[in-house]
Image (cartoon, rainbow, N blue to C red; front, side, top):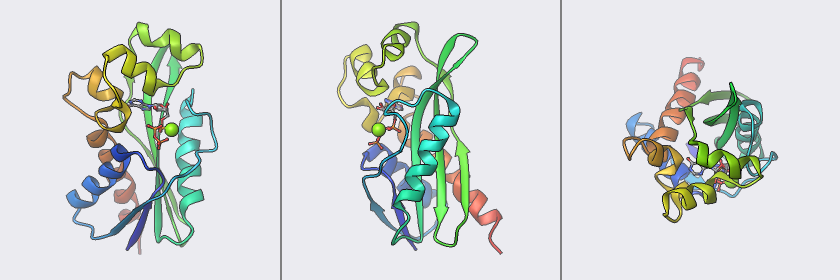
Length: 169
Ligand SMILES: O=P(O)(O)OP(=O)(O)OP(=O)(O)OC[C@H]1O[C@@H](n2cnc3c(O)ncnc32)[C@H](O)[C@@H]1O
Ligand SMILES: [Mg+2]
C-alpha cells in the first residue's frame, strides 16, 4: 500500500510511521508538501478539520490513500485551546476524520496568537527553544514532555485507520 503524508513536517511523518508500526500495517510512505487551503494558523475546530481534509484530498493523486494532519486553536469560554485534526482520504473515495488532544494554552501565548502570529514561533519564543513544531510540539511543552506531537498525532492516525478498517468490506 502506497500512503502519502500531506506534509513535510517530521513530526507528522513520524506520527504516521509510528501509527502504522503499532497497527502492523505494511506500507510505503511518501511525504509531500501540501496546501491546507485554510489560514496558516487555523482559529476554529471547523477550520482546523477542513485544513486536514484539504491536505488529504489535495495529496491523493497517485497514492492509495493520503493522510492530512492539521494543528489549530479555538476559543472556548474565552480561553484558547490547542486542537489537532486528521483526515484519511482513499483512492476509492472514502474519507475519515478524527481529532486528537485539546488542551488550554497559557495566557502568555494567547495575546500573540490573537495578534495574528503562528503558534509554532510563538511556542519557540515562550519555551526558548527552536523548532518545537517539528517534534515535541506545543503539547510537549504544555505537558512537561509527557506527551509529544509525534505520539499525539500517531493516536489520531490510529483513529483514522481504525475507522477505515471498521468500514472495509
Ligand atoms: O509543515 P506543516 O504540515 O504545515 O506543519 P505545521 O507545523 O505548520 O503544522 P500545521 O500547519 O498543522 O499547524 C498550524 C499552525 O499551528 C502551529 N502548531 C500547531 N500545532 C503545534 C504544536 O503542537 N506545536 C507547535 N506549533 C504548532 C504550526 O506551527 C502552524 O503555525
Ligand atoms: Mg503549517
